[in-house]
Length: 221
Ligand code: CTP
Image (cartoon, rainbow, N blue to C red; front, top):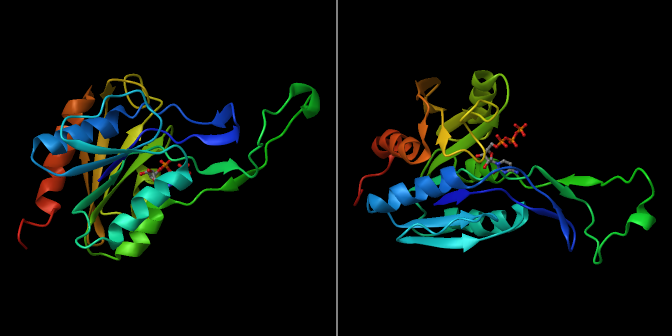
């Protein structure tokens, strides 16, 4: 199972809080897995991308909708072999959604939007699985101190593998067709670090699956 794209958090019927994720990295991962013969469910935030061949797609809009689509999967029997959280999930949402368009003249000159925290889907999955299947893969989008933040996210969110990328670097991250990522694999108390050079997102996806494949349960086991 792969998640991809941004989430949109509604302010009113015409406005939302979003982010710059294009969904390309998650879609490339889903496509690459399907090409290798995996059964793939792609939970996609609002993106303008075609569904890769052979992939089952579920569209969602908000972080809460994404959580509702993803969290029950770990309870399934059997659960997915692997969950890759490539989506850029919004950490917060407006505490109230107006039923009607907020009108400029009603808002004054310095309007504010109160926010509340969204569920952290990856962290909840990390708690739910407690060291057993599925293999849990997170992403870390950072603009500074990539290595330190990525190591912290790997441990704190309970994932097995973390894909770190500096979204502020030229040719890397949101919107771009290329990406430069570092793959962190947890091995007991140690972390293996695999830095990759800048390359097209389809090739990054291949490298990621090459790293993940030996960690996945073997068919029939
Ligand atoms: N994630 C999630 N649910 C959230 C926020 C993030 O599942 N509410 C997941 C993302 O899909 C990604 C990982 O957590 O796999 C890290 O996301 P990122 O935005 O880099 O980190 P945050 O947890 O949001 O932390 P910060 O904003 O402080 O960097």
